[in-house]
Every structure is written in structure tokens, then in C-alpha cells.
Image: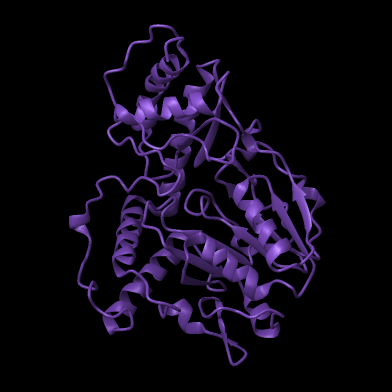
Length: 378
């Protein structure tokens, strides 16, 4: 690696951050619809644009009519905590954690809601034993562990005859994997991941069993206004028809609509999944060709296709920071250092808004940055 020459070809779009993620190819702020800006979100136009966003998400996700979809505050975190605070406590709870965000839901369940859950953990790069899950419990899990690069392989482990509810934090998974919606009672995500949209807003998806829980169970703890999904014992249906609980950013809504229309134009969910697959395969090829680079997730069946986490031989946090800084200074790759709580390494976003050609162009730059960061004079 000593004396590795600096490459000449750079990724056309060096945006590999795992959130907020790359904007869709060809994106331009000038192309966004702006008629709703400066208007009330409760105006006829505002409601229509929010409903348009919901309808496009439903179409692209192939969401069945049995499931409701709503726009809520606080990004994916707000959406998932809304689900926890409004529905947990009716049954025993099992929480799964194999990375920092899953661990955050454990903290909420244990320290905030004081539910004494069963906790199934695994180290970064691994999955807990999914066969050990007791589906008489409500079960909380992340579909795709953004900070570890580990995902559940599919939905086969979720019991069809479950008594408890399945709660899926799916923020780096929707639009990149084929989600079996009949296995999902609650799902949450945010626009700034696979869609490359803007942050601040979350999406909450409720299956019929989740609605039944909301209408039949009242939590023992007080609920803030932004979490309240029930009025007079019935689901607040307006939330799932564009009548948001609080004021949304219509600019963020228009940006999301633009991303969804781009996805629709290129072939819908199948095309988005195909692009993520192609990007992950391009990065796999880079890893396979280098003995100093490896996947943190050893098992390909549970390896993320979006937030791909890599280990670098002999590299501590200092080396990783140097590599990331060198790549950013050259305009070759932005925001590729691993998550702060994860083992030292790189994290490359391979979601649908990234182009495979840019992943391919990244390989020689990783060689150069590694050589520079580990040289004796570095």
C-alpha cells in the first residue's frame, strides 16, 4: 500500500452518508413544487399534498389496505417512541438489540416505561437468536441495524399466530427490502434514508392488530399531545389522511413527493430494491479484492444492503478519522466514518439513491486513503 497513487476518477456524487442520505439522481431544489409553501397544512391544497405523499408511499411499499400510514413528528425516533408509549404495557415485552438504535429502545422500555422487558442482545456484527423470541410478548426490533450493518434476513421468524404485536423500526429497510406486511403490526421509518428525503418527519404504519390495541388499551402513563393517536376511544383517522398532529414542513413534504415520484418513474419498489442490491454487490466486490477490508457483519444472509459497515485491518478510531477526513478533503467520499458507538470502521451507504458507478469509483480512493492514513508519516 505504500506509495499508492491518488486516483484521478472521483465518484460523481460522493454522498455516502447513512443519514441524511444522498438525494435521488438528478435532484434539484429548483424542480420542487412550491405552491404549498406559505400555505396552511390544513388548507385544501396542504391536505391534498400530504395525502399525495401518503398515497405514493402506500403504492411504492405495496402496502395492503389493512394497514394505515401516517406522517408524524420526530423522524423515525419520534414515530417509534409514539408506538411504544401508546401501545406497550398491555402484554409482556421482548426487545432485541444488536446495535445502538435497538439498544435505545431497550433503554426506553427499561428506564422510561419501566416495563422489565426480556432483552435479547448480540454484539455488533451479529444477530441474537431469533428462534428464542416468545411471540406471546410484544416484540421490538430493528429490521436493519443502521450502525452495525446487520439486518434480519427476512420475516420468516415472525410468528403468523403471534399473540403479541411486532414493532419494526424499519428506517433503513423500507424501499430497500421486500417487507412482509402481514407479519408487521407496527412499522416506522423516516424519509431521509432510502428515499434521500429531508429529516424531522417520521412515518408510522399500523396494521389492524395495532389499531385494535390502541382502541382497547389505555397506557398507565401520561401521553404528550404529539403521541396521541386516539380520540374518544377511537383511532384518530385524520392522522392517516394527511391531518398531521402538529405542523409539518411542507417543503420537506414536497421534497419527499419528488423522491417518491422519481421512484415511481424508474419502476417503483422493485427498481429501488434492485438499485440497493446493485450498490451492495459493487461494494462487496471492493471488499473481496482487498485483504485489509472486511464486513463487520460476517453472515451475508443478515448483512445490510443499505448501511454497509466495514472493518479496516489494524485501524483504530484515529486512523478511521484520518481516512474519512482525507476522502472528504478530496471530494471523493463524504461522511464514511462508522457510527460513534460502533467498532472503529467505515460505513458506506448503498441505498437506492446512490449510483453503482460511484461505489465502483470509491474503491481506489479507499486504497489511497488507507495508505495515507497508515503511513509512518501520517
